[in-house]
Each structure stands twice: as structure tokens, then as C-alpha cells.
Image 1 (spheres, one colour):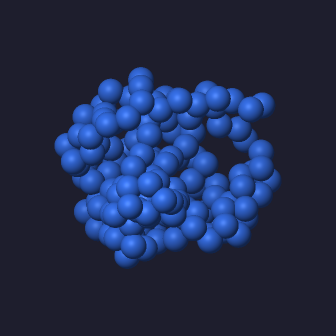
Image 2 (image 1 turned 90 degrees about the horizontal axis):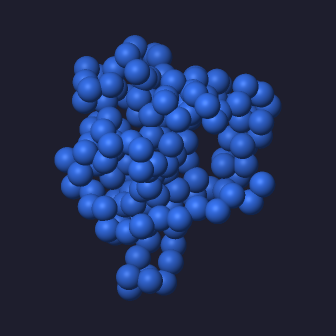
Length: 149
């Protein structure tokens, strides 16, 4: 299968939201107001180091992830890439699209001068944990979140 990964544009937002909703957790937590998502996309685009990537097969968006570059002082001033919101269409899961997507993220991270790629995932995603482990990620940290709303 040939998947083309590219930077998303505003016209991709509805397809990305559909992928976020096509998920056991996203079905309950994503909304339906397109203006909210378009405003968020515009804010991401303004930040410069925050990128929404889509994967296409035959011109149809079938995968997405968010890649944010973070400069820091720790780890000898390592620059990192944070991968978020990884989704593959339910019709294509298990067919290698996720592997291609993570490899795309790694290539982009290296090109941006990153020495580390990191991600977080919900603990309930046991299949995802296995997937990331198979790709060489190690569960090296415990993450915490605090809602502010």
C-alpha cells in the first residue's frame, strides 16, 4: 500500500476530526463544532513548531498525527519531537499504515535536529502499547495530566 504523508491544511480538518472520532476513546470525547477545530488548526499553524500531518491513500485521508518540536536544556540541550493524536482509519488498521506513519514522524524529527522522539498514550490502549514497543519505544516514564477546565 502506498501512503503519502504531508502537512495538513485547513481543508483536511474535517477528515482528521473524523479519524479522531473513529476511535474507542475519541468517540466519546471529540465534539462536532467544526469552527472549534478550525480555530485550533489555525493556532497550531501559527506556532511554527506544531505540525498536523495526514496520510493519504489514493487522495483520501486515512491517517493522522501531530508532531511538535520542543527545544530544551535537559539531556544536553536535546531537541525532542512529541508525537500526539496518532490515528489510522479503522478500515486500514493492522495493514502497516501505522508503521509507515511513525517512520515518517522519525524522519521529520531527524530533519528538524531532534535527538529524541517521545509520545504518550492512554493506559487503556494495550494494542497501542504493543505497537509502540515493536517500533522500539520504551515505556520509560509515568505521565500525569491535570485538567484545567
